[in-house]
Image: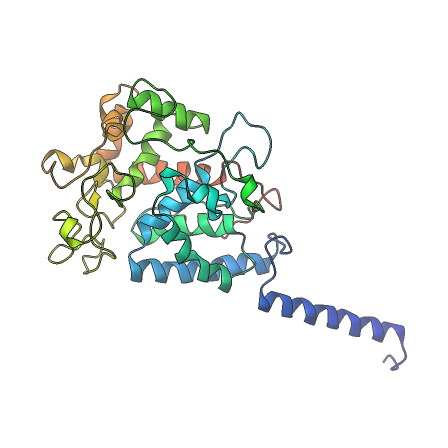
Length: 335
């Protein structure tokens, strides 16, 4: 046994003190830059946060807006720009005011506000990871597929690193990139990020959940509140959840599908044909089942929800990694 003066004993005490300090830092929340995303502690934080998010999303019917936030943070990626973070993508930049002020992000400050308590509670997670974790959890909580996600994204550090406005797709003409029609515009925007026709159609299927509001995109005449809702977005007696329970969050707006809180393949079944007044369909939606390159995929997803889920999961995972810098380089997977 070592004596009290034994150097080995002193070294052991020093290691214990360092370990205790590390535990305290973890308890009180180290910054994302000081965390080691490759550690088991980081994976444990991701799992705990995922559980908290699932409960919150289910209680507050927040799946559509958190999925939109994840999409918009990642969807600024430009493959032609070879440097990070100038290339845009899933780097947490949407949390800064200059990017949040982009026209396409109208209404998303609400989603960011939802996530701030989760960031405080799980402080070791980067914002970029939290945003993408929320999007993937939203899909699964709403009844959609489990996304094969990778975590360990590094955050940008300031508003000067936000991408320029105009990288996200427009809903209607005139298109900001000068495209002559909706199909060309979709290919220009998604092609810039490295997606093909099949992936474009699969990702567009995210419109199976959510709504458009006059106060946000301006693409619908329906707005905030039950008095400006459709028969599907005003609340009782219609319940849009996957489990049929009452509840929808804030009333109002116009959805693409009847059960707009359920992630399924309803978007591809063209429900709007029977109810064009209550259900939304934009020119970019129309292009998916009229363009010769898009239409075969659209029909396949209408016939098979399993095919849609498989392709959506792969495409969303790819989107969530566009422009991301991972630490460690291989990322962190939960399963």
